[in-house]
Image 1: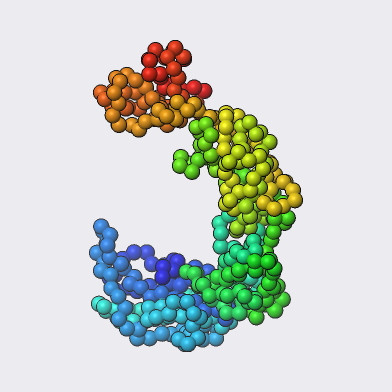
Image 2: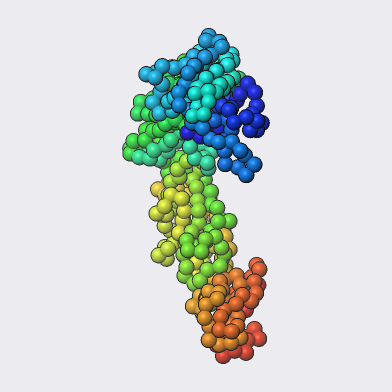
Length: 396
């Protein structure tokens, strides 16, 4: 288990000796009454170009000591919370009272006896945060019916996050808290009933704490965020050039009054520009099949305008606009790959919608980038083209 950088009584600055040991622990102070794993390792690990250390392993722990047993103690094996790493190289400590204590471990490694020390700080818990386990969320702990929400349980003390597994910090009916991360913190989950509902959270550590997990429905959605800068095709990725009748994907997220939840509801879309864009099967009003995106068919060059809301909701509170360039079918049919064979020396074609190629010595070679324009195939006599096969040109 790769715990983060150690907090030690002294800072290790290099391989001054091949007989050092290090005792590592959580990055933050640990919460009072919580449990945390420490990590005993070789202090001089080999493998670098200028590193002459050899990597040794722990064979036996000879002594475990704590200088202030009123602040910290070693946990018995049967006390260690399930999921918390605990073995010969991972002694588990429990914080008893606010303060700091020095942990000392003497062990026999595969080459010699070594000693390592670590200063552990213990802080009283005065608050708890429940951040959801998704990067995009801004919201309280809400989830659609039938879906599962996973969140961390982070104790705080003095306005700062603390580490350590603290059983009973948060509990609720149907809310298992079993996951433990590298900072020795717990993770909990809750699956909302398919008919919707909520559950109250309480704490055995902070009697005044109250939390609530709740499902939400379509009519709770106050906005739809449409990420128009990421619109594009599934095959080519983001982009504003497509072939006639191609389907593009518009990423979306539904938002509640309190913010954006981890999991959005599918979106309903209504086109305000039916000559330019419709649903994937020509619909003027359609529900997305995916809660993260809307599929849209592009018919011709122009600005696609949509009204958006949660599928099943009474209103469409948001709008989205994005411009798309539809190239000719001839351009789509004549796309080629670089370095592939070609027959007509000097002929041109489109490599993609953004650059052109020319036939040189029987192979397609890169010719020109169209920049913000588009590569299109034109016929003889158009845009200066003299080739009977047509020409690839960059158009603004």
